[in-house]
Structure formats: structure tokens, C-alpha cells
Image 1 (cartoon, helix red, strand yellow):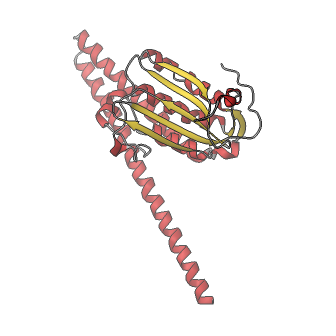
Image 2 (cartoon, rainbow, N blue to C red):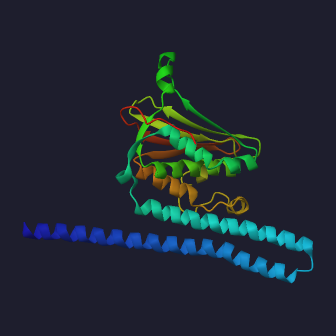
Length: 274
């Protein structure tokens, strides 16, 4: 019996060592990728600044390269912001700060943080609450009430904000992004959906889009300013709040991201839009 216990303890120890090694490998891979991502815009800014200095006598060239510097600076700023958001999401378990809040208030806040970007591309953002799928008319009154969820407001808002931001980034001008709150067939669950009319995601990439630094089209991401971290942060935030996230997409037809959360019992707090 003593030998069996010792062998069990040794197996547990080996398993723990293997897990620690895998975590170390993941950390090293992340830091390596992060360093590379940070060096790219930083190096571009340095080269562009030198080019501007050499072209000081050409106002047209100065304006062009100054615009490039501004774009690379914005990309660097967004990357640093996403790295900070990812670290914050990992260090502060959201369920420890959970409170009963209105699901629609999260949507309002997330949409509000993206109105400037949407306006710049002439993209309309629709916000609403939907009845459960296949629900009959008798459920309409119930669907109109707001839905209460037990989450950390800041963490879930960050997740929805990132989804709306991505929808705007990868959608053509003069299209619509819809953000809705819905009751599920199972009354204990609810969903927040972000639907766009964008370029869509290839089927081969759907299983990888939540990986850190993964980009479906690296060239397009550089053009649009994507960091490859937004969806990784979103997934981490949603799971930290006790929910799940899924995606449907087809190239040329847009994408639908669905966050599913447990519905809290009782009424949500009043929603006071800013």
C-alpha cells in the first residue's frame, strides 16, 4: 500500500512538472511573439522619422510620411493597450467581482466606446433585445424586460467592446453592425450577439481566431491596425465571467459572434444609458 501511495504521489508530481513546463513554454512563446509585434511598429516609426528628416525640403513627402508615422503610432498604442488588457484580465478573476447588472447596460457601454470609429466609416450600429428563438407571441412582454446577469461589468464590457470594434474594423463602409441581447430557449441562459456584414472568416481559420496573435490575413491586419489580441482577450474575459463564446462566419457574408451567459435570477438593475 505504501509503494502504491508513493507511485501515485510520483505520478502526480510528474504531472505537475509537465504542466509547469508547458506553462513556461507558453509564456516564452507569448513573450517572443509580443516582442516581435512591438518591434515591428517601433522600427517602422524610427525609419519613417529618419525618412521625414531626409525629405525636409519636400512638403508632399513630409505629409505622406508623417501620416505613416501617425498610423504606426496608433498601431503601437493599440498593441500596448491590448497587452495591458490581457494582463489585467489574467490577473483579476472576474467572478470575484461579480454583481447583478443589466445585460443591456453592458451593450450600451460597449457600443458607446465604438461610436467614433463607426461614424468614421459610416457604419450604423443597431442595438436591441430579441425574444427567444421560436418563442410565441405570448413571450413578447417577457422578452422586453431587461435581462439580469451576474458578472463583472468592466470585464464583460471589454469583451463586447472588442467584438464591436472588430465588426467595425472588418466591415465595409455604409453597412450595419447589430448588437442584441436575447433570451435562450433554456430560461437559465441568455446571449449577447454581435453581427456584422463584413468580409467574413475562412472556414479553415474559424478554429484558430481566438488564439493570441493569430491573424486570418496578416497583410489586411497591418492595413486595418489589427493586433491579433482582441479576440483572445474577449474569450478570456467571457470565460472569466462564467460564459462561453462561439462564432459563425462565411466569407463575403459576415460574421456572428455569440456570448452565452447564465441568466441571474430576479430583475436587473435599471439601465441608465449615458
